[in-house]
Image (tube, rainbow, N blue to C red):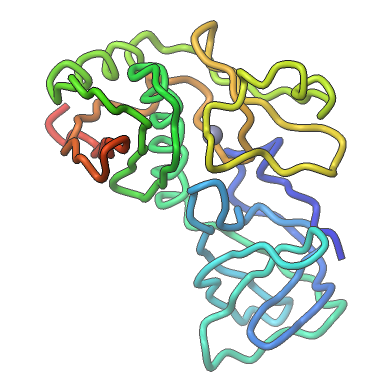
Length: 238
Ligand SMILES: [Zn+2]
């Protein structure tokens, strides 16, 4: 059962209608969804599913299942829907929007620090990238200011698709050494930020960089001889 991924084309939509296709343990698979499943360093969405009788189920987490299914994990103790039921879903928008802002900020961080990225993750109040940087001269204030300049420039953020074969001849597009884009689906999604960044990504992003708001570098850690971990937080005073 493949779930149609509505969040890809409509990252700003918060409500949708769908049909229950599979119910397994506490996980519900729908024919279509706006809930982003955990992946690429971005957490799975939370929210609610409302049944025709008005009862509401809490989606605690969203994960990828087998063969393109998206698993909506329902909080323990709820009465689960039946296959074929119509539901209306609503994502927790304030949490998802924070993920979109911080996720897009991580793309800009990879521009501010032009070094190979070996890992990363995004949360609703912070994010981090790991860089392969044996000789580090990174300075918190300098990175904070270049990041905020990229944000304030209000670059448009757009998605496009290319064939896997094209990516094979343009390997420089993949900045994230540890997280290669998924293969075998024919096409790969690229996220373009103005004329400053282009990289494969399946996550959700804001439409323009100014929407991220001001951020600051919380810390820069030396995790190993090569690995520098740069942590970012939203700047509440910005
Ligand atoms: Zn992304």
